[in-house]
Length: 172
Image (cartoon, rainbow, N blue to C red; front, side, top):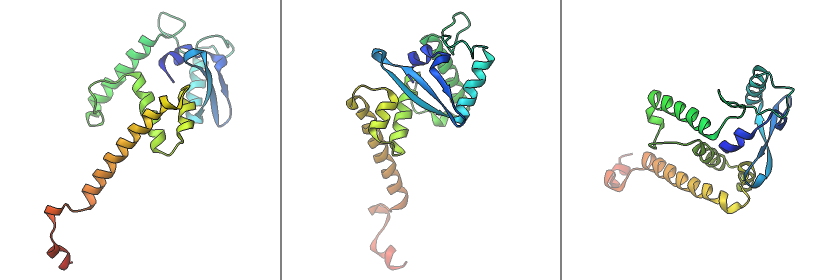
């Protein structure tokens, strides 16, 4: 979800089932889409709504800040940056970029979905893009990732010309 979509999320936008929940997100251009979240995430969300005592108040925003009934994008950014810094301190090897934004999570999720074989049109709908061309950039990123991984695999498993000679194979 975009940060703004998370800010706008109300209790009435969530439907809980035994094995999942669906979340209605209102995206750019007031275009609505519904996505599913797995049971574990649904359970956490349900507990949070109950903790806030808003489970019967369908027009209330799910996420609030300390000063407002509705969380703001800047509040989400602050929380995100806080946890990125904690992650960098604990596992610096997992961070390639100098800085990350909440939107980078959308990029990462879309790229991982494509790398896992999820069709481009499904990723398009999941992200709430109006056009497949907008989603196409993730396929290109995914191809670069695939190329990099294939090269690394080849480098590990196949000897380079200067490292081998025909004699090496004769003695095998």
